[in-house]
Length: 437
Image (cartoon, rainbow, N blue to C red):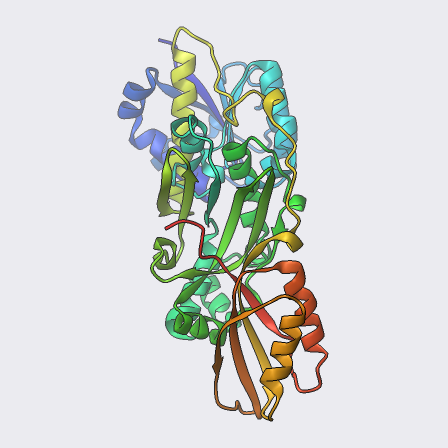
């Protein structure tokens, strides 16, 4: 049988791992895919011939432009990352009748509609298992294994950098700056970690998860996004005292006809499985009326876990090409014309419990003044923790509220922040008790 030709665009850390897997496991991959895979060409500006990977000079190109439509290629694997030239090359490959595999969540979050439409027009497929949670097979699970259920919730830890930083802050009592520096030293954070620590990477991934789970395509601009930079060791310690761990969660769930889509630090009960997901691991919960709650856990990043997902997509597409049928799976699990614009719930209308931290002057009447403002904004207090003075003479006051609307809470915190006895701006973290167990 004619081999299935592969073109690889980008041969960095993940690309080299992909080439290594294809070479090392060639026999078992051929058995399971029903055809041998042949690496026809690799585009990378700095790649040199590598005998250990079987990369000779004849397959190495400096540009991807001549390779996207290479006649002997059947599948184009895009691992450049970023928007351009990845978008142009993928559209060129689809236009030439090639199937595409990509790990590029930023591109799919912003331009997925255009790419999936081009794939449908060309009757080609797009595999993107590696775009969310590395080696955790959540894309295929949502698209195929759980397709019969009307899912209600998908949420989880989808950024290993933030989870590693929060783990260090929890275990070592480090402040954010020190934990970030250590994460960089351990290669768990990029030199410029903004995309991760401000929550944007998680928001991009949530766009894909929500599209698969609910048939509602989103863009990152539609996802409420808040990072972890304002969290302190004190917040993490107080959370534990209240029975919670703080995690950066990506959350999307149905609320009647509306859809919530948000990324932010969240207090999770210590008894919840997510509370014990530490380091660079990812974990995603999915819940539906038929399914109930399930969790998918594993390495969220790293060369080999990500390469495993990339090669799995290559094998699936090769298997389809090797078979008699040329049917192509829907990238999002249903026809594009069946996708519906979401009616997003405004963040101000989200209802949950809250952790509040105030730094106040140590004098009579302070608690009463704060409680009075909260009461006027329809926010009731569930518990209070008051500690001794800090070095500056302020007293930390910690409160946990009952359920309240976010709009009411922010109005109350604005009023409290203007009180003369309150020092630093009030801090808050959302508490999620009802995400599943």
